[in-house]
Image (cartoon, rainbow, N blue to C red):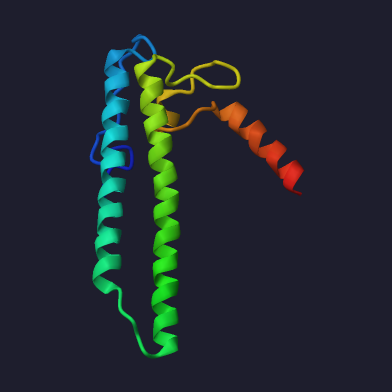
Length: 143
């Protein structure tokens, strides 16, 4: 049975913490930079595949039902790519945080977000506690 703790994200092995090492040291920042760049590369490749698919598959079907099905498929793909485009922007912003030595710290309270949380969500900007409070507030506002 595979070890659930031994996984790779976007082809990058999880960071191995060393007892007593400084938080967000150069080695950790480089790890997350590689992780984010690999993730961005995957997203960009998917965008290219979608564009090629849309070009190759575009047809003017005489049957309205066939045309509607194709338009719905294209619409769904474009919505997905739009979400990915926004994620690419978030990755770029996160890479800037790494370069400015502001990565890994909560935007709300300033505490360390934590290596494992960042492994799970490399673009996280809130610690678990602040994110939980944020979600509770959102539920209260949204009903």
